[in-house]
Length: 418
Image (cartoon, rainbow, N blue to C red; front, top):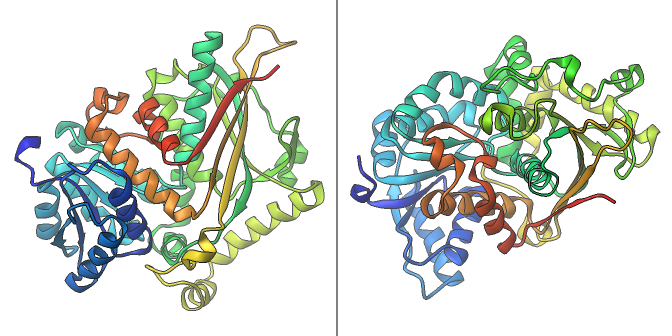
């Protein structure tokens, strides 16, 4: 099916949900007015109420169309066939997302989502990557808070190293430096659902750092950083310029996507043959770092127990719910990274620092990532377009995507360290 025969450029599926609504708002206020788009979901009443709110945000813009869509195969295929790009915010993805992926891959429809469910992404790549490539459907999961910041900041560091130093990267030490915000009901439901949909063996296999890399990874003995016994046991590391670091709550999904980008960009040649991504989050001191590391392990183990999952499911936000807008507007997130170039000079290798920050609702930021990725796919040239289809990553959208995000308020700063 040709692009010209499609009714829409973009459909936001799940637009009346917490993240979907933020996405639709950013489309309304920031994307070109000649965009042909629709909001989709199961309830006409809720979608009509959403459109009324969108009109108030931008009265001069024609409202989107409404598409009522169920989660049945026929309904999803019909929806995917109508649009060039489909954004899915209907989670948990391991429960509701597979049919959407299958429909987009089969109909040659570009697909974006914001899952953090690595086992599900791993399963989707194995099941539908070939079909998506055959039908020229570009599929980019994890393009929200998970894991666009890690992927885009690493790409920015690698690109700066190539342009200014003509060098690849060795280790990228990446840190969640500052976080103020709370997860939505959909995010919590996704985390809880993982331990009901997948066995421990499946989770362990799919969350290995290089599990989604399309080419063989660098040999471990060539990777620059070897964890000390202290770090292995207590999860703490100190890095000049970043401070005391500990195990990251985002490290697992971020690692799999960043390492997939490493393989997609020149089979590892662009980032460097000794590339290594090391994710952490900042701790106040060594004691709090150890405490955070242990708490994370205990928390994950607790989620294995059905009674704990039941309590969380019944006493936290439900899917579609989240922090109120006034409180969410005070959210903040900042990531910092230091990359060491793959240098032949072991005494004084060059280093590059990077910073990515956002002030405001974290879920609005996720909506920004989705909407700007969609218009990048529709209007800009990118590596993703050159590859032509299959399961890709945020980094394959390249410089035009980063520039669009910066215009929308995302702060990205990369420089060679003195």
